[in-house]
Length: 229
Picture (cartoon, one colour):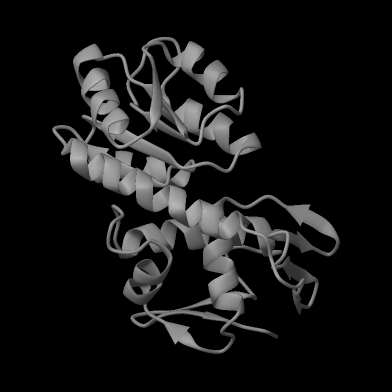
């Protein structure tokens, strides 16, 4: 039985999330303190984390950032903060999804299921090892490891998915909408801005000069293209 950690200081909301998750076969644990929640999440016992942003002792942004340093599990934000800047920041630090309060508990469960399936698919055993190489950039499709000039680069699952998709289709221009639908799917929060945020994060990690990228090119008004050089 998969375990889900709920980090939420509003007990009524936390219990509502717990009840719906348990009805769908998940074992859940509720933590109302941000610092304790981070320690729990760091234990590696959980298949996914549902986190609020406004928490005592440590906010949700910090928790997500710390989780992403060591773990690749679905992290879903459920927050009363509904401004676009908060949603973009949440995704930027590593959240997979973002729901605003009030929310549908059934939708939360559906999104968690979708992300768990996607992570499982990405972590599944590879039938054969293959390395995509472009001028110092290496993408190992068996281990999902990425390196630049021999130095390993740590990418989130979504960053890897996006880079792999573009690198697997060099010289083809894809619109932001097409990329979002391919990588995130219709069940996830987000839009074309989500793609732009992740492209910027990837560039900061793989490009010599992120302001003048060589690998991932922007075609203004059209989309993005991977340049195999």
